[in-house]
Length: 189
Image (cartoon, rainbow, N blue to C red; front, side, top):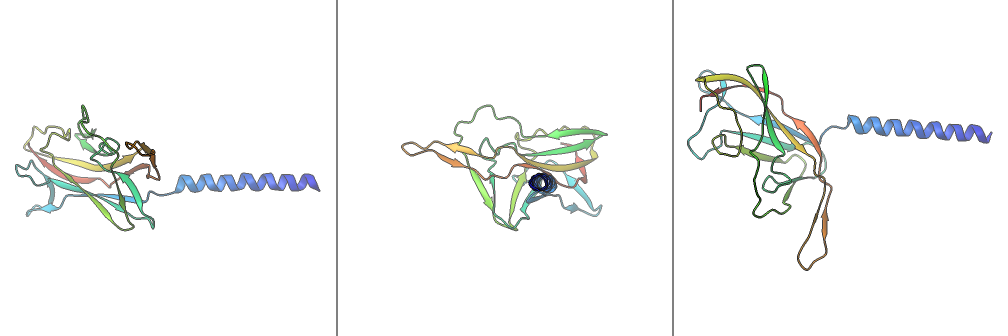
């Protein structure tokens, strides 16, 4: 009788662990990411062209779709600087577009923001800046596929304050999400 109870207990534990693992693998991201490139002019195309103004060429929206506040690293510090990237399909080749590496941070401290449920964070994307490594387009215009990718791998950080005890920041979301790809026309820049 005792042997049956032990076997039943072990089977129950194994099933419980299997369900927990399956749930963890099937969990969805608490975020959704969207490229915002409006259709323009009479051609109704999504277009990107080099802007010679200080206006962004397009936007990326990161929305908290969960029921809980979500904390993420700000792009103004080294922990969040390169979390956003893009994937472009150009002439059948996949090209990863990232921020150009920062050679040296003069001042770097952990900076973060918290999105409440249904809140958005808006990334303004300036192609003309030296921040992004967008490929040069030689033709007058080129049709490409573009998607945004947001990935955070740093879940916690200990901050050292002068004359104060260390403070640990944690509970940061980690993972990767991708937007749906958009077909866009890129004009020569």
